[in-house]
Image 1 (cartoon, rainbow, N blue to C red):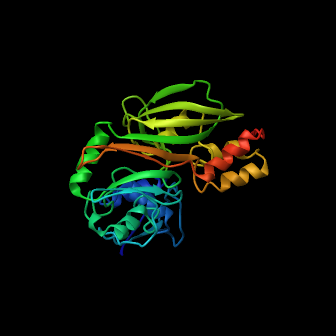
Image 2: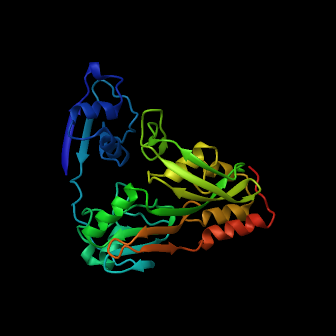
Image 3: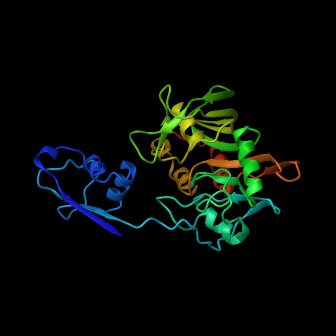
Length: 321
């Protein structure tokens, strides 16, 4: 661990701490500096500040910079629910709560580490920290996710994603009554400038194009049960797109879902708490097998965590709030 320290001068007074540090530590991105502040590695006068802290003349600032994590990934013997597997491809039915690959918020217990223990030959395919990962699912989303077991399979599957020949079908329960029976959301997505953990529909000319197709399956009081299909695969795409229209996913605290649930009956709120994530499930996956050329079609049944919510809503106890 390396340590840096410095003092703020009179002309520095009023500057945001993270911006002030980024000017003095050019090897670190501002996002990295914010993370160090939030993780308690920065001290001002011996105390832990917030990123928005404004420096004062004479402030003594110190930063502990942890050594970077090793590039390799340790395998972890975590049971996996395998939906399909051969010598080339592995498809897993991921539970909610499992992170796809290591990141700043979680280093262990990931799908990538479990896959490495399950199929050691996957090491190095696609990248050392994301072995075999062809596409990802958010931590709170359950369902089908594909991994490649060879580099040739990885190249073929990622090419199919780019060409939009991989079909991904999701089931979602959202707040609000969606009036249109079907529709297409075509809106670019980028990082939300107000939050490091959120994405947002980007202003014109910014972000990356994102296209989500949806169809109403059932309207349940003030909620709607949807099928969604992805033309693109941006971070948080379905969650951001639906929330941008005023229909956040049930259980999605990041994009406004929880605000609608405060007035719900206790039993229904308990069902939401039991989701272990958000009411989103990757129910269908279809791709061309990279070796045989045949079309692989896989289905994951709707899990009880979402099915129980639907049953409650169908019982006539329509929520309010």
